Image 1: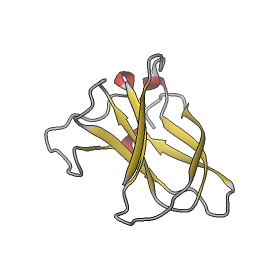
Image 2: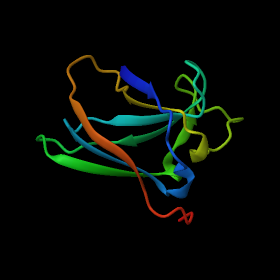
Image 3: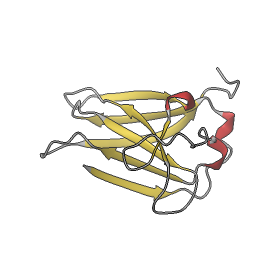
Image 4: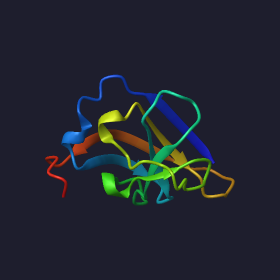
Length: 119
């Protein structure tokens, strides 16, 4: 696997959106967008999967909050609270397909989408 993540200081109120959209170019492999609600290194992450199209074309993945599942080191903790988008403090990307080899993912942007009406 490979991963990268960053702290996000001024997310605004992401709860006003229905989820996140990811504009990317990739290699048709499966990736995860991972969110954390604290600034800690370890702990529960909320993940949603997406797969950019092959051939280097630009693709947008629409990831509603309901698709983000709690995860801790590959397990789904039963005691985890649902994702609270107002508390997002870290964003990350991961490929974890169990395969050794090259991959390519270029993320052009990550943005909120929708109008926060809970649909």
